[in-house]
Image 1 (spheres, rainbow, N blue to C red):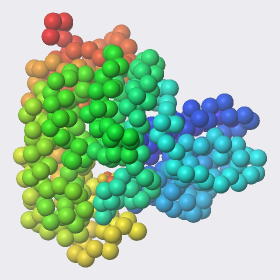
Image 2 (image 1 turned 180 degrees about the horizontal axis):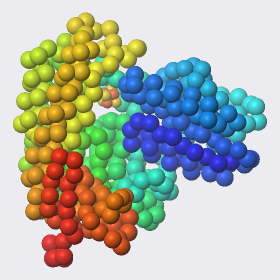
Image 3 (image 1 turned 45 degrees about the horizontal axis):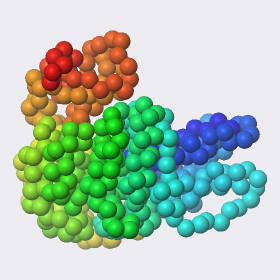
Image 4 (image 1 turned 90 degrees about the vertical axis):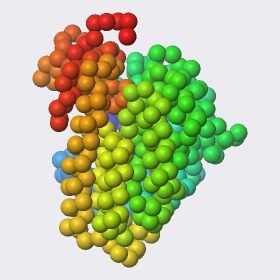
Length: 421
Ligand code: SF4
């Protein structure tokens, strides 16, 4: 059977879609299987999942439609009503082959416990040149607005040696960069014997020659002095961290259940930016959380202005049924949320321009990812997306590029000839 995956949501989901493609490869029989890997992080994400299942059902009436992932765990009935033939929760995602085959035979198979992460390994990433490497799942922080921790199961980490073997495999498959991903990387290792830290894991991954390593989203608790020192010393660790802020106001952070203050966030991110050459950072911010008044919103803006993220993802708060935040008093009117989101989007654009202008004339090392309109595009080590006019280069090449122009929507560079840099 032909297998087509459709992925919504985060890097962990993208990794798991690759796992699903590998597990379902060579599935016997004719016809098509469409696997929708869903997300439940916001109401909008859940709506997208339902819409996609409905569209696939309409366009492929004879295909087998399988819904998996966070929304499939949180609200399986909605996806069945939208037209999914089979709905598989996160706990059983890695057993998808067995479950699909049983479904095709007309049998129902009971669920098992959550699988150990050591069992989840991919050989390559067929959709991204910068391959995702999942090393952790689950979260026990339990932020009051979040559905994810409710649907991802207990904390589970991939042992460092298992992650290194998988990284070796991905490097051998030609991936020049690996993006280390998890649901809450700051909790990496808490469930493993000896409690290896994220730094221990990174040291193990750095034993794999040639590839460079990037961390995906990392909560502020994970930005430790030891991690900062490792980033400062090791050129093969990409100097960019995505550190979700959510709010720059301590009262709002406490109501969210986030285990840090705005000052702690600023201190950790500030030290990272200061200590690590060429470092930049990105953040997520949620606007209009219950109880966020004008003064609290202004505190968020000031903190961002002070630290200047390269990237900012702005989410207006949308109450998710089943989360404590949905029942909190002092909900913010939708028009105010929209206004604040627009204001932050504008601030984000200005700050990104400021950060990127700071690299004018410098040499960065992008990995070439896609080519369009006579230009190669790719992420540099510090996550600036560079565009360079050039022919005859191969996807996946990492090369030195001098930044020559920074505009609102694009950062342009030319290949640096001086190989002594
Ligand atoms: S840290 Fe908070 S937002 Fe992140 S997955 Fe855990 S509960 Fe959700």
